[in-house]
Structures are given as structure tokens and as C-alpha cells.
Length: 98
Image 1: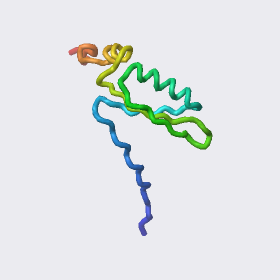
Image 2 (image 1 turned 90 degrees about the horizontal axis):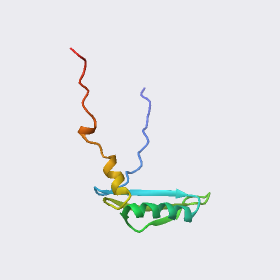
Image 3 (image 1 turned 30 degrees about the horizontal axis):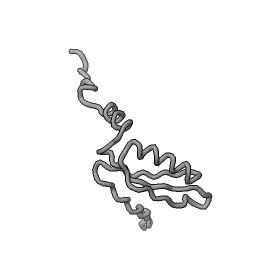
Image 4 (image 1 turned 45 degrees about the vertical axis):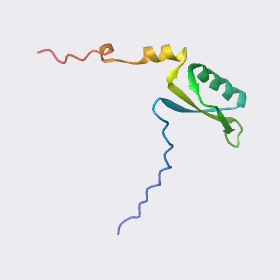
């Protein structure tokens, strides 16, 4: 007799934003806190208008926005430039000596 093993159905995947964009969700205890975090992100990246929703029964706010990482403003531009790695930054391991 075979056992009836069922695999839970995975939740539908969220759509992936286009290349160069990132969807961001902020969950905070108050709408003001969520807005302050979104404001910092908007200073660094072009972004869409934020959308806010209740976060759940406990209260709080969930805020969504999409940022354009292809067109960063300062200070993100300098941070992104210095955080990118290149092959020159990481020399190849020469391997064991012969």
C-alpha cells in the first residue's frame, strides 16, 4: 500500500520587477515611521509613489514602493559604485606550489 503524501501547493510567486528596479516593503509600528524610512530611500533612488496598508490585527503599517536602482541619487550612487566588485578586486588563487 502506498502512502498518500501530498506536497503543499506553493504560494504564487510575486511578479519580479523589471531589471534595474526593486520592490520594497516596509513594516513599521506607525505610519510616520514607515514614511520616514521611505523618505530616506527616495533621497537615494528615484521611486514610485508609496502605497500603504494596515499591517495586521496588532496595528502598524505596511508601506510599498518601487525604486529605480539604475538612476540612483547621492549618496546611493557613490555607495553602489564602491560596492561593486570586479575581477581585479579579487585576484585568483594561484593554487598549490609545485
